[in-house]
Amino acid sequence: MKEELKNLVLGFRKHTGKTQSEVANDLDIPMYIETALELGTYRKPTKRLRDKIEKLTADWDHNDLIHIGRGYRIMDVLGPDFKYFLRGLEHERGIDLNELNSMPEEEFYRIIGSVNLDEFDVVDMGRKA
Image (cartoon, rainbow, N blue to C red; front, side, top):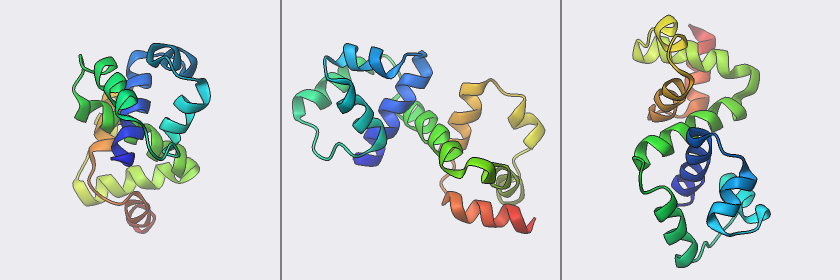
């Protein structure tokens, strides 16, 4: 739940182009709680907060938002090694990097986030490719 929630909130923010402050206002919570939600450090969100998040994101496919959030997170976590991640995807899954890089940004991150492989294993594959 924690992984999904942090990626859902981040994916929603990226998808809508909102700032953390705007999402915090939409949820009627302090900014530090919104930040903690995205980082996955807000340990026990209340049912009321989960309901607010559900209502705020109800118009979008939650799986897509989660994948978008995870895609952004993978890029951020890997930093300069992200290029090896992309090479690893090409090698392991046959994903055409030219096609992937030509996609709209949101679609790019949705696809990256939907890959059901450990990102560090994919980086290792990319380094060896």
